[in-house]
Every structure is written in C-alpha cells, then in structure tokens.
Image (tube, rainbow, N blue to C red; front, side):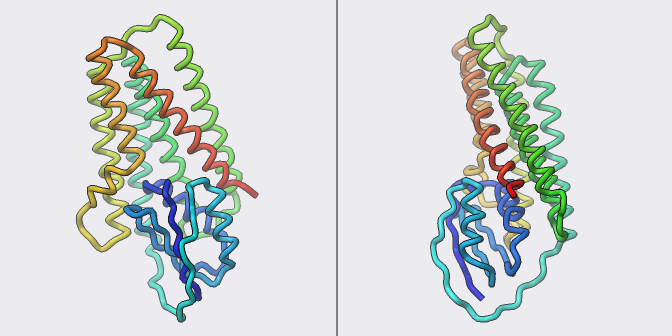
Length: 266
C-alpha cells in the first residue's frame, strides 16, 4: 500500500472537499482519503495507480500538487459512517439551499447584485452537496451526466448575472438597500460558519471549530465582501461597490461551474 500526500491550495471549503471525493470515487484501490482543510492537505492511502489519482486531481484546477509518496505496510481503516455522512450532507445542503432562496429574493428586493451573486454561490455549494449525497456509499451511474447538467445550469446563471451587472453599470439604477445587504449577509456568514463547523467537526475528533479554517473559507470571504460592499454603498452613496462585488462573485461562481463540469468529464 502507498501513502501519497497532496497539497491542494484552493481546497479551502467543505464543498471543494466533496468535489475531490466525487472525482476520486470511481478509482479502484483507494482505501482511505484523509483531508486537512486548514493546511490544504489530502492524504491518500491506496493501491491504485498514483498517476491516475494525480491526473484526476489536476483536472479539478484546484492547484493539486503531489508532495510525496511512500510505501507503507498493510493497514486497516475504519469504514466510513455513510449514514452520518448523509445526515451531514443533508444538513449543509438544506442550509445552503435555504439561504440561496433567501438571498436571491432579498437581493432583488434590495436591488443588490452582490446578494444575488452570493445566492448563486450558495446554490453552487448546494449542487455539490446534492451530488455528494448520490456518491456516498454507492456507485452512481448517472452522476457524470447530472454533474454536467448542473455545471451548465450554474454557468448559464452566472453569465446572466454578469450581463445584468454590465447593464446596471451603464444604466441608471437606484441605490441598493445597504441595510438589507449587510443584514442578510451577516446571517449568511453565520450559516456558512455553522455549516463549515459541523463538517470539519465530523472530520476530526475535536469538538470545537478552528477559527483559522472559518476565515479561509471562500464562502465566508464572499459573505464578508458583500457586507463590505454594503458599507461602501452607505459611505459613498454609490451603486458601484455592490456591482463590483457582484461581478467578482459571479466570476467565482463561473469557476465553480467549470469545476463541476470536470466532475462529469468522461
């Protein structure tokens, strides 16, 4: 058996961990995946072809880099608790989808593209968790096709969002409601932190969350960015901070869509 270590710099949230799990799921001969999001590390215990694992990880464009690979003796690993995984995934899927509905509704009410874009980021995570639910403990024959459809749908929404941002840049638009922007984003920040906490707690024996992991999560950074945009709308009396933040998040959502598409790569 081999123990291969990868550094994955852009694997900084639980949704990306689940993308890695799904990508490697079809590989025969992987005995254990061990994640450490805090240091962006993946340990793979396997008899499978190391080059195949490396190639699949590189396809996700998360910056995966092989650090070392050593031979180890045969080891026995505790089987994953698939029921617990399903419960956790349903919980975080529910959180993300609920906040997608909340943010997209309030985003239009507040005239805020930052909130609308953040809602699509929540939807993107919900899609990943939904696909992961299919993958937990079973072979998924339709996973690749659904991943492709999900990726194209997410890309379409992100493209529509970018077009709307451009339209609002050049047109006369009322100021976004900074109060709603800040208030809803604070709630989303709490929700993302809670989702990240329960997932990271399940991956370690520690009963407390690691603050450093919370603040390096893309989702939490995006929430903080929308809050900052709301503050800047208040201070500058301008629509542009919201539009700039919206454009940035739509680009991030587009990148996420491309990664989901790579899960469906033949």
